[in-house]
Image 1 (cartoon, rainbow, N blue to C red):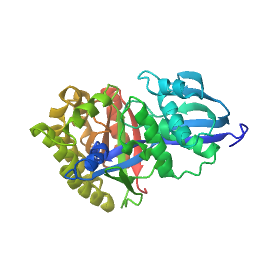
Image 2 (image 1 turned 90 degrees about the vertical axis):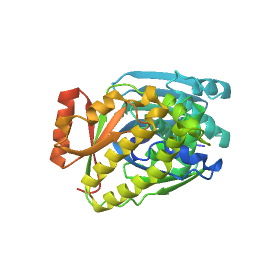
Image 3 (image 1 turned 90 degrees about the horizontal axis):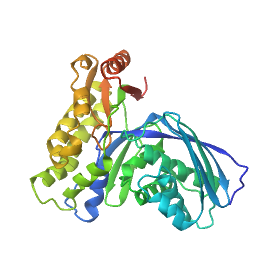
Image 4 (image 1 turned 120 degrees about the vertical axis):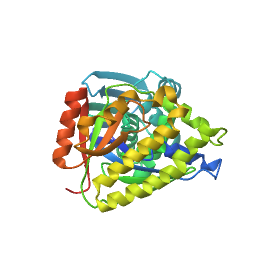
Length: 357
């Protein structure tokens, strides 16, 4: 229980998957097929995110949202199972994620009441591979935890966020909720339903990243549907290629990338990104040609005017034409590359530095 007079401030960042996209849900299939390798994802929180103030309400969800373009909307919902479920499972509802989390929290803690949740500022673009939906789910889970003294740890908050999100039409993997760990890099390991997290990723020197909003569109549900046809058992060369990509190839690239980070070598991290994208194009694109041909992504990755300033780049999240990421050679090159991308393509960029400068 709690009082409605307590107001808490919340911030949850987005997350960028540096390496290992899709291997989170792929590793989950180990419970059905032990020949599938463990999933490995290296993620980092972003500087952008979702800001909110929250307080408790005895019987309702009173929700306000502000999009990254400043558009504001609101809704009031009673804490009734059927109404929350209808909202959570509605493909067009912007409130589905919070409703999904509320249902999962109240399933475990039936005496928990509602929320007044005011998302007063959003700096995180949506549908760009930066886990905006997971950030909303973690935000709601954390609000319930803090306001109702549920004594959940970060992993527990992530679990409720994940269960809430998979109630909705968005069938995410567990990697997305890694935004709950904040802005530091984290290595996540997926073995069936078991999640292991290494929060001590060593970075030997600053790695200057650029996250690019491609200002195009992607369909994560379609990409996931296409790639998941390879699991739990591969039945043809294409599906065997997907399993190879998300298994052995991913393990090999991850080993190289972690070593590059330990050395603080932006050049080697960039080379790993170039290889990761080439392997993804080789094995994943044939499984989802309508959604992973990604002409906008590849046009930006292959831009000759960028090459003096970057070591390499790749897609983000589920891939497709959502976002790209680059490793810049220096701090100054990071700014120069952003200037080129803005002038040549009219796209917006986020600078992100891993490790200490």
